[in-house]
Amino acid sequence: MTITQAEENHLKAIFKIAEKEDKPALTNAIAAAMHTTAASVTDMLKRLADKNLIVYEKYRGVQLTGEGNRIATALIRKHRLWEVFLTEKLGFAWDEVHDMAEQLEHVQGEHLVSRLDTFLGHPKFDPHGDPIPDAEGRWTYRKQSLLTTLLPGDRGAVTGVDDHSAAFLQYLDQLGLGLGAELELLERFPYDHSVRVRTRDGRELVLSEKVTKNLYLNILSDRES
Amino acid sequence: MTITQAEENHLKAIFKIAEKEDKPALTNAIAAAMHTTAASVTDMLKRLADKNLIVYEKYRGVQLTGEGNRIATALIRKHRLWEVFLTEKLGFAWDEVHDMAEQLEHVQGEHLVSRLDTFLGHPKFDPHGDPIPDAEGRWTYRKQSLLTTLLPGDRGAVTGVDDHSAAFLQYLDQLGLGLGAELELLERFPYDHSVRVRTRDGRELVLSEKVTKNLYLNILSDRES
DNA sequence: TTTGATTTTTAGGTTAATCTAAAAATATTT
DNA sequence: AAATATTTTTAGATTAACCTAAAAATCAAA
Ligand SMILES: [Mn+2]
Ligand SMILES: [Mn+2]
Ligand SMILES: [Mn+2]
Ligand SMILES: [Mn+2]
Image (cartoon, rainbow over all chains, first blue to last red):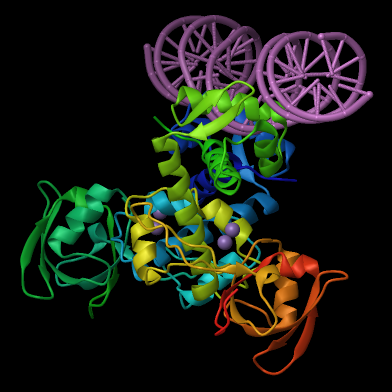
C-alpha cells in the first residue's frame, strides 16, 4: 500500500496535535495545521482510515494507529535530520531550513535515512532544539522549562522554542539568544509579564511575554523552581 | 507561473531526447522515456506549450523554448549534484543513487543548489561520468570514445557509460571497470565484436559487444585513431 | 432543556495527471 | 497513387487532492 505526500503530511499533523493536546485530534485543528479546510480534512481522514493509519469516529476526532504512528515518527525523524544537514553541512540559518526539510522528508530511499543519520553523527536534536527520534522511533527526553517559569536568580541555557516562525528565530538571533545561549533571570514585571535578563556576555535585555512564552531553557542555577 | 514535478520531468525527457537525436522529440519517444502513454504525453505537451516551455506542432514533435531549456538544464544539474552527494558523502554505490536523485532534483529552495554545489566542491561530473552544468547552464565538454572505436594497442581510462542501468553498473564493478579504471585493448574479435583487454593490474578480460558499445574512455595511448 | 453557536460532514464542484479505445494524420509499401 | 502500417491525437474515464456552500451533529448558554 503506497502512501502519498499529502497523506504523510496529514499523519504528521495529527501526531503533533495529539502529542500537544494529549487527546484525539479534531478536524478543525488539522485543517488549521495543514492550511486547508475542514471539508478537505474530512476527505483525507476517510482515506487514512481506509488504510488503517488512523482510527476515525465521525465528529469525535482521530487517533493514529500503530502503523500511522510509525509513519509519522519516521517522517519527523527525516525532517529533523535534513534540517541538521542543511544547517550543519550547507550552512543555512535555523530560520531558513523548514520549507526545504518539508520537501526532503518525503524523499524515499532504502538506507537513505540511516546513512544520512550516520553522516551527521547521529544527532539527538535538530537546529530548533527539537528531539530526533532514533531508527526505532524512540525519543530522547530532557528537562526544559519555559522562560515564564523561571524565578529571579535562576540561570539557564536556551534549549528550544515553541514558536518556530522565521520572525521569532530571527529576533532571537538579533538578541543573541540562539540555542545554547545562557542567561540569568534578574526581574519579573507582573504588569505585562515581561522579564529582565542578563546574557553571558553581560548584556541586559527586557523580553516580552510573547518571547518568554516561546523560549525553553534548561535551568542551571542552584535554586529550585 | 508554477511548474509541477510532472512538467519538470517531461521537460528533462524532451531535453535528453533532443540532445541525443538532435531533432524535435517525438511523442512516442517521450512516452517511452517517461513510462507513460502517447495520449498522456500529448496532454502534457499541450500544457507545456500553454506555458511557453516548448514549441509544439501537432504530429511534428516538440522543441524546448529558452525557458524550457533553462528549466531542464537546472534539473539535470540538481539531479547530478545530488548523485554526487549520495555517493561521495553518504557512501552509496553508483548503481543505487538514480531513483533518489530523481526525487531530490525536485526539491525547491533559495540557494539550495548553489550551497550543495559549494559543499561538494563544484564537481564537474557525476558518479556516472556525466557532466554537471554550472549555475549558468554551461556544459563541460571532454573527449571520450566508445570502446568500440579503440584500436589494438590503445590504452584508455573509463570516463562514462551509455547504459545507466544498475545491472550494467554492477557488472562493471565486478569487472573492476569503474570510472577511472585503465585498460589496454589487446585484440578485437570480428566474429561477435567482442574484445580482449588488459586492466592496469594485469588481468585480461573479454568484453562483449554489449559492453563495448556502452563504455566510454578517454584515450591515453600514443597511437591515434 | 430548548435555543443558538460552533464544529463537522456531505454534496457537488475543479484541476492535474494519468489511463484505454477509437479516430485522424502521417509514413511506408506495394 | 493506393493500400496498408504506424504514429499521434481526441474522446471519454478515473483518482487524488483540494475547494465552497449547505446540511447535520454536537456543544454551550440561557
Ligand atoms: Mn521544521
Ligand atoms: Mn525543526
Ligand atoms: Mn541519474
Ligand atoms: Mn548520473
